[in-house]
Image (cartoon, rainbow, N blue to C red; front, side, top):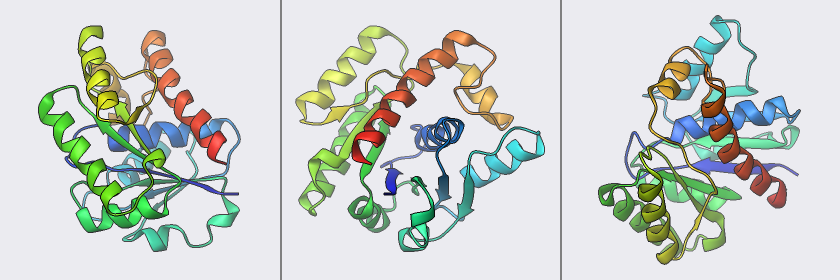
Length: 211
């Protein structure tokens, strides 16, 4: 059975593509057949990253495609174990359609109230439109301190949502790795890779539970 995991965001720059790429890399490494879909034909963030990855001689992370709609992304999906959707930012109608057809919907958020409030509103809107709440999960990114992470997690939990265990700290090394076609689990620093891998492993375990 194919599991569909969608990454969405109410705003850009919160880590949607970052987590989608890392999940694809780690899932492919574990032997799963992965399809990674870039649903933003204008930005092409994931697709261009993967092209750079291949040009640099790194292992592919599955079948990477640029498509326009979720329906296109889910054609012939039975040959894959996992379909990962990197949705376009701030595309309200498209986001709802994606969320309705995904087994899990991951929304990354930074720790500031400017990130958290609209993120909660986004999930609230999906629930109001009929998306089951148990499909919706937050992931914390751009964290500077443990106290900041705790406050952000408490805010989301008090709003009634699940939050992935672990979080990504704000480090230039994550950006540098992705700039060369690597994932956040492939930096030059073991401690950063371990932190990123822990977050992604939590998500992989959740995928397995939904498989």
